[in-house]
Structures are given as structure tokens and as C-alpha cells.
Length: 91
Image (tube, rainbow, N blue to C red; front, side, top):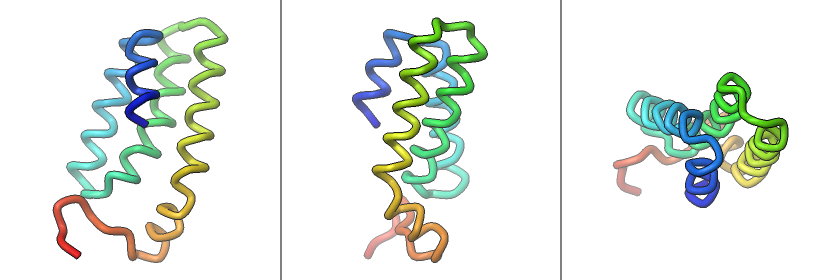
């Protein structure tokens, strides 16, 4: 996620800032970093489209969002089950 953030900061800085704000808001509200990452990847795609970036950047953001969702599939299962660890909570 951090690598994608760095890349999109160059490709679509406005969209990346919006996605970063979304990430921060979700983590602050829920304390789930994984949920923040998943939501931010989707927000990035929406923001890239809304800011009028080129179709190749929009397509890249869709690919990144898919990759993030794929890599976080175990986290999504734990979120549904209620067993995902929250940021700042000890084991």
C-alpha cells in the first residue's frame, strides 16, 4: 500500500491526498488499519476519476484497488468474523 501511495502521489497528487485523508479518517474512527487501506484504495480510484486524470492512471488505480483487496482477503474475513486486531490494542 505504501508503494502505491508513493507512486500515485506523483501520478495523481490530489487524488492521493484525498485517499490518504480517507485512510486516516477510517483508522481514527474504527482503529482498523486494514479497513482503512481497503477503503483508501477504493477512494483513490474514485478520486482519480473525479479529478480528471488520464484513463491509464484510472486503470492503474483500479488495478491497485484490486491488488489491495486481494492481498487483504484474510483481513476481510477477520473483519467479518470480528476477530481483526485493532490499531493500538495489544495481543
